[in-house]
Length: 186
Image (cartoon, rainbow, N blue to C red; front, top):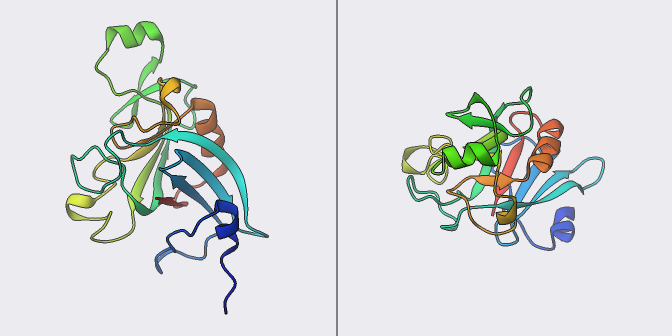
């Protein structure tokens, strides 16, 4: 009988195995929506958690449908890393820096904004018919891991579908990964 995956012990649960199109996992991100936790996992030379941080997934729960304002499940990859040369608190709109740095005064001027701050890790689903293509396409839904102005909401589902992180945790994660890094959202 095959030994259980070493991460089953670390994560204290089974996890969805990666699809065959992914190369063997060396470093990947696990997002646990139930516990509102993100873990950066390195599998070699032995499986271990390299970073753990609280996050905020969607207020509407998990789901793949376009316009559902839910966080999509399943295997994804980091499609693009955006904002690496910008300051902490940089404000993004349509994945471009607006030239602004977040402040409470700026928020008061624009109370309806969904603030995307500091860095963006743009996700692309890799499971056709589930989180890739058609009305379930995570990339076309503009699902990101990004910074937030609502630090008090981290640790509880509150986003519009993206995964929000504290700015310092996001900067730390951003430095440690490359595009195409696998991401599992459960």
